[in-house]
Image (cartoon, rainbow, N blue to C red; front, side, top):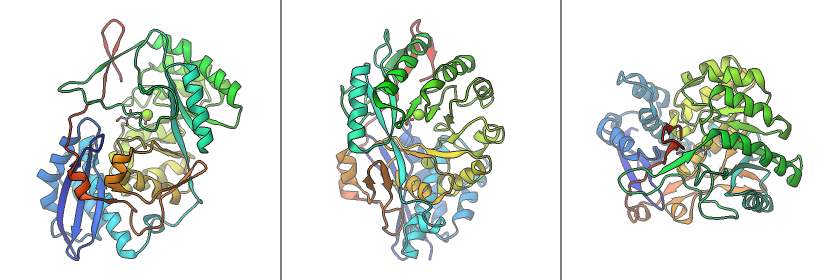
Length: 408
Ligand code: KDG
Ligand code: MG
């Protein structure tokens, strides 16, 4: 059997998604997520203009060979656009292989290593009262781990804080449909560093020591600022501090490590195992944060996580709403199968999205399971998808209070 058609489907049920549909000559369909937030059409073009025709006639079972053909073949390699496109092909081929085997994908990856995967939710609030309310709401829903983000005095809307008001928000969405250019936010690291330790202290006082607390610095600190912050917050026992420094400088985390035992996570903007080479071999991180969608798919992520395992480093796969339910399913199958699972990010998609993508995930007291449908367990309803036209959306741009462009 061979690949007969590779189609790209763009849909926007509240937010944009790019999905690859591969159909084999005997009619089996596989789905792959190719969504790159704010740059969706670049990946769609990469797939439909440069990849789709090269897939036709290939043996759908030769996943490793197809991966190498797409990675090494074009000469130009890596980068988020290329690696999201390769990821989509890879996921779709694994989906097909598992459907042909009549098994959920995790069985082909070695079978379940656990009963379910612990997930963390996004709790946020413009002030501590709103944040506390959100954390309580997630605890009531059964979550045992929450990422906490809150407003900082002197700053307006900032990364990670839902603009929708207090309470449990499933739909925090940073990409804004703001017309032809991104919206802008402002930032001051000094205000942030002065404010956040007190927030963690209050959370520990109000919620005790069992709750797993995570926090995302979103690449905004210099190495020495991050080192000081990681040291200051040690008493509050974070599960992890994520993306404390800009992602492209692997050696920045040496400084943070020298000064603190706060566990570190990084990698959502990475797209290759080579982005982690120093971080893993020098044990500068504790969790790998790549998205399956942005790091070359299941084939590449399995190798990356096996490499990390040798150094005692665990997974913390990226799972925001800009990862489609197909990409989320790929993450959940890997999470269930690998030995060095750490935690999985979970921002449930809105109802419109779940009408387009039918999932078989189950949530039980803080743990997700990908379900036992053959394949990834997610099917895209093409009629429903066609009802949601692509709408340009951008991630915000961030400026310091004096107007200097800063990392968002
Ligand atoms: O597209 C960007 C988002 O996925 C990112 O800002 C979310 O940092 C993020 C996270 O940890 O989920
Ligand atoms: Mg993040």
